[in-house]
Length: 415
Ligand code: NIG
Ligand code: FE
Image (cartoon, rainbow, N blue to C red):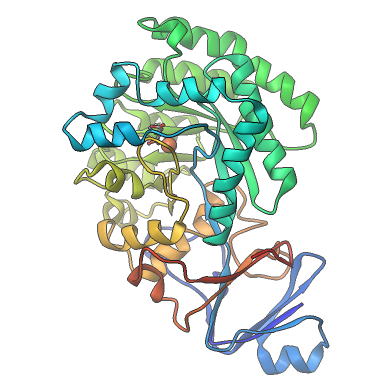
């Protein structure tokens, strides 16, 4: 396949973009991409590629932007039911953590998810995956965390693997058994932490070796937060996971600062996510570490909170910043990375170019997948978008709609 005559071809070439380097799009005006066997074979000026190759099909992208598919590095894709009634309660003045402490919130989605049959769970999840794809997300990280017991968590992991096999959305799984204290352990977070370490993590590893051998182990994530897991409980879970060979992620500083960002850097987590209440000192330490920061601007927006990740301070210290939707039924039911970009441009004060890099090559880095995904360079997987607009700055500037005209996954037009 040859995609040619792009008004702007955004290559995002050159690897993840730290600090002040963020926002180099590698724009080729009148550019073309040659795709062979699901991979990018060549990128260059249209005249050169058309002279050298007679490719079928040839897609004319004149008047359009061609760019890498979005990578959404933080979602809670797999759940059943909804929390529309809680949204109304929050608008009437109840807070998110109050609702969780009262047995609602995450725990209400746990009840609905446990009660759903595997087919129902998959069907509801599949609809969201399809919406993500239409909005241009070609790869998404997706967490368990609405099971909170070994079998229910494994069922969610299985749903995620099934979804990935079905495609075309590529799913990168994360085990988040430590999303909330399981109802069976109400008032006993230490007991549930012990269960995760002694039973769940070894069970996930054994299950994985049996059902997904050959694939890298999933990430292990913890919700380090008041009302969820303390810093010491988070440390116990993450160090146990690391000893079992799992790569790590963490939800840190969404509502309260418990020190999760420092823990992520200390343990070499691939990313620390949310980072709304992180102190300036911790932002500096994280920026200087190998751990990526994943900002989730849909979440404060969804909660109508005024505070967002201090992205500018993090970039000033040279950090690796990515953005994600946090797609979940509680705080941010949003399948669109285009909307996350629009919010990032306003509340993280990113330029459109910075937000696009944070949603592609840096988002790939937040999953450790930057060698295969996130840019249009020879050898990389051919995951790309054709936008209906001639200028990349329409991303961020426009919001609430969908600028994606075609989605190409592994070299196939899928939307
Ligand atoms: O990232 N904070 C924890 N997890 C999600 C919310 C999940 C839910 O409310 O169901 C988040 O915001
Ligand atoms: Fe989350």
